[in-house]
Length: 372
Image 1 (cartoon, rainbow, N blue to C red):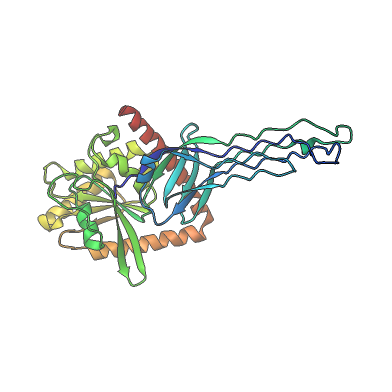
Image 2 (tube, rainbow, N blue to C red):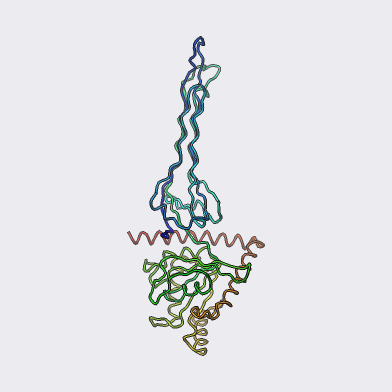
């Protein structure tokens, strides 16, 4: 199945049914009076998260969704049937954005989570409603109200605990193959990863986390070059970014310069995402000597003023991978416990998430305008 993580659709709620203008007409009964019934309410449109889905590809082929309209009222005080609500199933991790107002209507992160995106129209009233002691034969009715209509942008962001970041051929796909059952394509040329991949990393019997591999970033990605910029939004839900650094780049060049390029592209995409917890992981350490490796780490700390974690692995030989995964598991569990116990920290993370979502929408919108 083709992986599609963006789609634009139009949703229309059902219209309310009109009220009925009717008078009772039966043999031997004079002036039976008004008996026009009310119309039915229009159906509303809901978005519902479904964990069995993992792509938005279906929305590319069906861009319009309409809920059922309510029926008009009838004589004998019969009320029109209300329209049925429409439930649109989307993958867990889908953001729903109103294109016209740029308002985020929902961020569906949990299975079966549901949100109203277009409210159905209210029913009209029949002439029975307007009968009074002084107006025994009213000819007044009200029409049903039209349902809401919205153009929505759907953005799917993968649900993962750890996200891999780096240049093409830095070893991201090799790492996720080494530590999980995921089998992304690995080859000796750039952009072998064309779509995001997820892998479940099992540390012990009941301890595991999800790792996301996205296409590599290149310089100029914020201007539309390469593939990575399009998929960077998938890293926004992660607890931690792993920045993989190839200590012996195939194309040559200074690895430290490559690190600075990636950091700059990340800032161009979202300043808030760039501030997310990030660990540096030096890959392919089997290709250089220990003394040279220590010298590179010292340069890295000095030039970047880096105070965070630095790990070293050889993804191909699985050297250092077990230790890295153990450290990741410890960090994730600590973060999750803090989210539960510390309300101030939890609220802060929520604010950062909202700010990040806004920046990502703006970045993607600017990129799309450049491509027109």
